[in-house]
Length: 58
Image 1 (cartoon, rainbow, N blue to C red):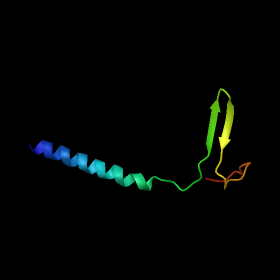
Image 2: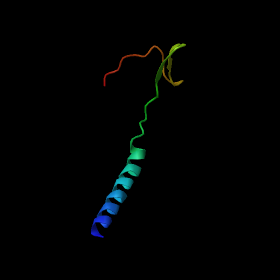
Image 3: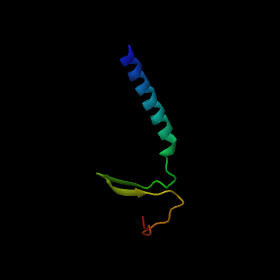
Image 4: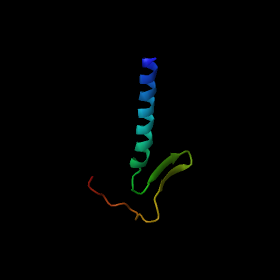
């Protein structure tokens, strides 16, 4: 009985951690997509990004 209670408590704490991390992991950076297919390669940029890209320090 005690073992089951401990396991259930662990599951609850893991579930709450996963839910809490969902919002914090969102990044506020533009999404740049590179695709390489049979038809060819392409780069997709958000409208606010200039092209060609300028190098930036991390």
